[in-house]
Structures are given as C-alpha cells and as structure tokens.
Length: 254
Figure 1 (cartoon, rainbow, N blue to C red):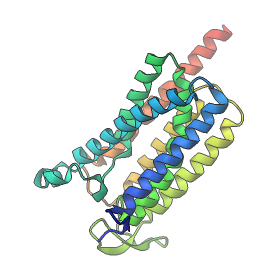
Figure 2 (figure 1 turned 90 degrees about the vertical axis):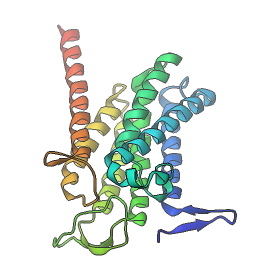
Figure 3 (figure 1 turned 60 degrees about the vertical axis):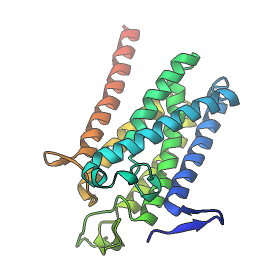
C-alpha cells in the first residue's frame, strides 16, 4: 500500500505530490534564472506558454518511456498505462520529449535556445532531487539486493523488504549537489548553454554508473539496461556539444 494524502474529495499519492512539487520548484528555479539572464524569455506570458508546452511534452514522454521500458507488465494491465500515480515516469523520456519541445518553441518565438536550456538544466536538477524523494517514498527505482556496508533495508515497488543499495538516497544527493553546483556556476555568467551541457554530461555519466546498482525491472540491450544505453547517447550528445564549442573557438582564434 503506497502512502497517499487525503484531500477530502480524493486521495493524492505522495509520489505524485512530490513529483508535482519537484516540477513546481524546477519551474521556479528556471524562471528565476531567466529573470536575470533573459528578460524577454522571462516575460510571464512567454515563460508560461513555454513551460506548459515543455511540461506537457515531458509528461507524455516520461510516461511513454516508462511504459515502453516495462511493456511486458503494461501489456497485461493496459488500464494502468494512464495511471502514473501508481508509479512510472521515466526522466529520460521527459528529457528527450521536453528537449525537442523546447527547441521548437525557442525557434518559433525567436528566443536563444542556449539560455532556455540553461534554465531548464537548473530546473531539472532541482526537480529530480525532489522527484527522487518521491521514488524513495514509493519504493520505485529501487536498488539491487546487496551485502554492502551501506545497504539499507528497503522495500521494492511491491513492498518486499530486503537489504538494498540505497540508490534513491544516492540519486537525491547527486541531483541536489548538481543543482548547487550549477547555481554556483551560473553566478559566473558562463557562455549560454554551459549549464545545460554540464548537467547533461554529469547526469548521464552518473546515472550510467548507478545503473549497475538498480534492481527495478526494465528492458535490456545486451548486458546493459536500456536506460544506460540512453545515458550513453545523451552523454555523447553532451560531448559533441563541447567539441563543437572547441572547434568554434579554434576557428575564431584562427
């Protein structure tokens, strides 16, 4: 039985509430950044339109990604596909769909994508830190059974308690630390797009490594989780961005 919040008219799963809280805090962080770095993008109508589009695309992408990664389960329970409150949002799906939506929106409104992406990076780091608290409460995205000294007695998504690698705890610390690091970097006013590339590279590399400690079921590609394959692809994208910058800098110097 997963914890819920009684709102009189209905009960809201704590997992869903924390994911919503993380999204709200992430939006606030992104808006605050844009207020300083891009007044035009921080115009309330422009920001809210973009946030709505990206949030809608990200939510659909997150759910679609999770369902695809657990298709054997959902094929037998199609009525649960439209019930994300039961658990099941894939951040990689949210990132990919949201990234595409943000790029399209920036082009349509004539906004600098780099600044929007930097704002999104701050929001994502903060939102994921809170979202992983939801995963901890829900028992979702749990760690492997382990005899490590840092293992904790924790439940899986089905309530089965065992000594597990504290994956959710590590992810909370990871993204909270990443948010603080990005915030400090933002104070240095780096080139537009820097925060986004740092976020993408750190998050991808860390999640790839932590993927070996995940115990929840998912699709596999050879010996790797499908999540890890996505992490590799996103990490390559970040590295390509850095290489492109380096080449441009060389060209400007020459």
